[in-house]
Amino acid sequence: MSRRNSPFSDLQRPAQRAASHPWIERLARIGYAAKGVVYFIVGLLAAQAAFTTGGRTTDTSGALTTIVNQPFGKFLLVLVTIGLIGYALWRLVQAVFDPEHAGEETDAKQIAQRLGCGFSAIAYGGLILVAVKLIMGTGSSNGNATQDWTARFMAQPFGQWLVGLAGLVVIGVGISYLYQAYKAEFQRHFKRQQMTQTQLNWATWLGQFGIAARGVVFCIIGLFVVLAAVHANASEVRGLGGALAALAAQPFGAWLLGIVALGLIAYSAYSVIEARYRRIIQPH
Figure 1 (cartoon, rainbow, N blue to C red):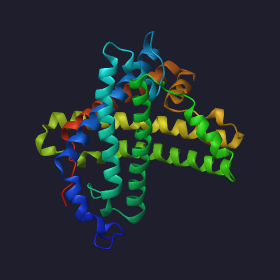
Figure 2 (cartoon, rainbow, N blue to C red):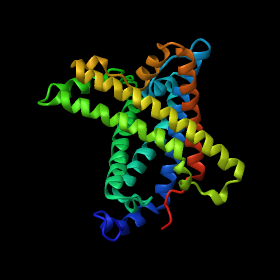
Figure 3 (spheres, rainbow, N blue to C red):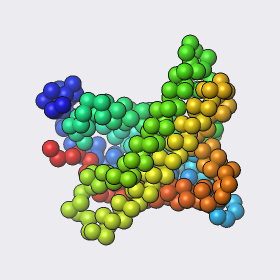
């Protein structure tokens, strides 16, 4: 479907004005960097758990707790939170205004991309709330939040089916990440004219390794959600930390966890590269 006939075409002109504002680009770049910091901590702790001692499997909320417990932790967490706010706003801009021209894709693909951006904005909004509570000293990361929400959904009419469907969607997202890693189409978002061939090669390799690791994690999370629906037991749901712990519990678990942990560290480096070289507004 052409952009002229796209159901989102009426938004294109305000999209360009909104997305081209200098502050939008600044917030997006700060956001990618902040996301990189969070995933670096998750990956580093998991790698330590796999290869040495003193590490642990945790999720993004746990990463924020790790930050706030460091010297000058609240100040550091404030900086990261500002970045996460920028990233959440950028994902919202992507969902509403399509600055990267997702509307040039087929109807189904553009809708899926925009919905994905919207759900990402919501997810990072929740992470921001966790960060604010940690900064204010009024709470801590809650590892049971996902299970609580799952239990609430299961209590609704057809809730068990909806939870199972959600799990299949998460698995689908994981498979799409694996496909993205294989195709490496994310290169089209880079300002390639500003990168040397070596930089582009490293960015591609880190992106493929990192996105593939996220794909594996999403597939595991989705599988746990499906099992929770089948068994009508919300306590079986696992988030990022639980998925990593499940890997560690398998035969050769230390190696499996270590590979995925290194992948998450690679993803953090890829996010930092995006902060520097990503083209925020795609050319027509």
